[in-house]
Length: 253
Image (cartoon, rainbow, N blue to C red; front, side, top):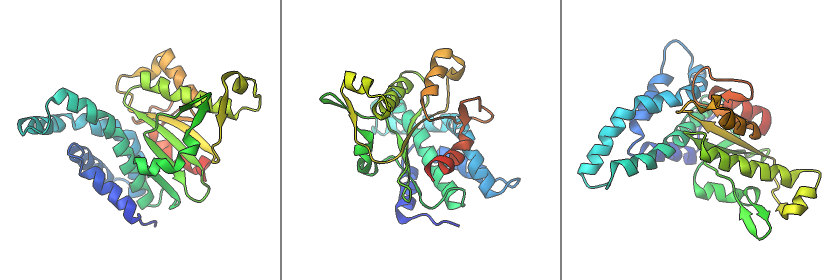
């Protein structure tokens, strides 16, 4: 069974030290310790319950916000709330990924990162030149296989609205840059010098049930994979988050 590296253990420690994460991580811990399934099964299925871990922790996070306001550590609960909501889901995905790796559901050659220092080594693969301007993806997490050097860029959002549009536009640029027909590349002066095989994905809790709205749902067709972190939500080209490990194995190996 794979053992996490010291860097991966530090990743988990850093996430746990974020003041708003303990309530969410406690729910994840309880889920993983269920008696009616193996730890391998619960680790895989946990991806589908990230929405639940976030929503059920809301009251406890609100108490923590109030404590920080009273102590003068934040000026506004509203501003702090907006800042942390966008980080909860990527952090949970990292934790569940690492748990899956720890129990053998993910190969030891797979790694995940959200830190800028980890992202920088993929700078060339994340940069598309459009004339004199550089276009980079909206990138919350990168998963890569150190053996094959294949990469998944994952945009992680609680909503499908504007941010999904920003993400799929970069994917369109990438497809144009890699297309056999260079007519559009010449028209817009697009060039790309990435050297690794790269996939672009989108993951969301779908808090606002937007995937059934045609315009929002249509955006997800542009990604190599789209994941919803809720149970029993798989629908055509949209996958449940529990299929995340399978996608990595099939495409990054």
